[in-house]
Length: 119
Image (cartoon, rainbow, N blue to C red; front, side, top):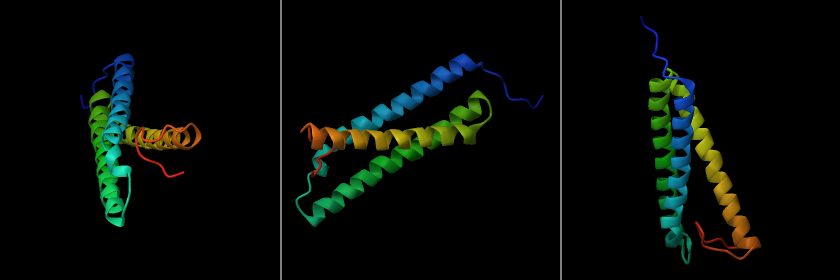
């Protein structure tokens, strides 16, 4: 009595990995959908771009924390650990996607994949 139910490790790992992959895909999709905001021609365009990027990054990180917490509490009672796992993994993926996009834009000439870069 008072123990958290053990739901098994296999399904829990699959669920956590699937949710993280979905968050990374949602980030890439959201950035691709907002690529028009990254072509800056004026200070106002830069301000709008920054607001859009804050909304995309902030909302996905908060959603990852909430989903990670709920998932962790349901799987094994470690909600905070899962929330940190989801947020850190998503943040690292965000940086990796941005760096890869920059390298493709400035090195290979493929600009505008998830944002417009000025090389």
